[in-house]
Image 1 (spheres, rainbow, N blue to C red):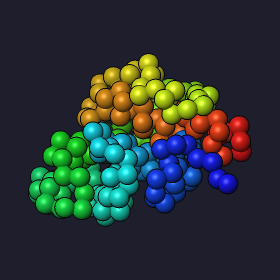
Image 2: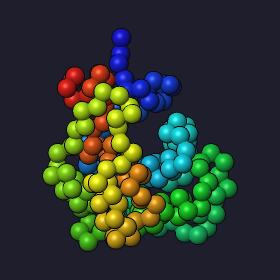
Image 3: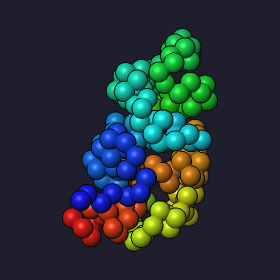
Image 4: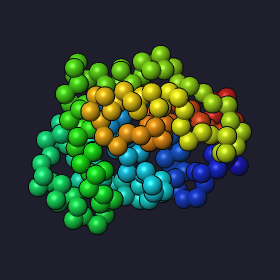
Length: 186
């Protein structure tokens, strides 16, 4: 029988995300951008809600192509706010465009990933947890990265969102020790 983290057992979409993406080291900037955006949309909502709307977000944000999203206009924002298939929060939608612009205008093109992974010395942090209640909502590193991201102009990147992003992008690995996807069980 397959053993997954407790949160990932509810639906096939949650299982697939858990099994193929969550806590897997990601270095591709477009994929990192997508994960950051999805975590932004998740703030205050359930992850299942975000996953259910992921295909619509991908469509509306050009599969999270950084250059195309960074070039989106006020008219695009108006169009997005009218789309019932996505989470229509004006601040989160504007943050998506803003955050694409920050990455596109990074001092060294293509170096957002390197900057991010330098915080963990290119090695995922492993929390050896046995139950979901042992997984923190955030940590000092996420608070620090959140402050650094805000200094660079990112929006909607509070410590809890950043911590979830670090998990999603594999900088932090919080698979339960009993999970088949825990590094110890691979």
